[in-house]
Length: 83
Image 1 (cartoon, one colour):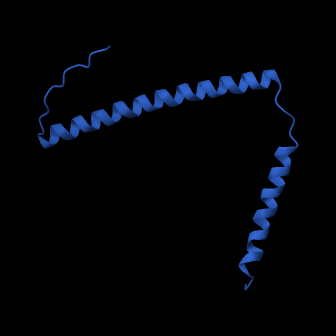
Image 2: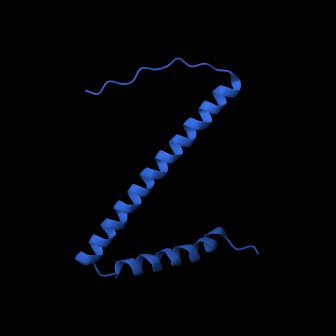
């Protein structure tokens, strides 16, 4: 098919326009929906924070295992003082 590249973009632009019109016609959220969305956002943030903490623990275990296998000795670092 030897269609010009311009004509290949037209369907994508039409879909983008249709999606834009669909979102433009949606009614604003009521208070209950806003509260539910805020709760879902907070729950997702908490889950993300827990997942990141678990990922950091896993990275620390990998680093310690690597150092142990390679025979790398590390000096004990003093605990940070809270101010």
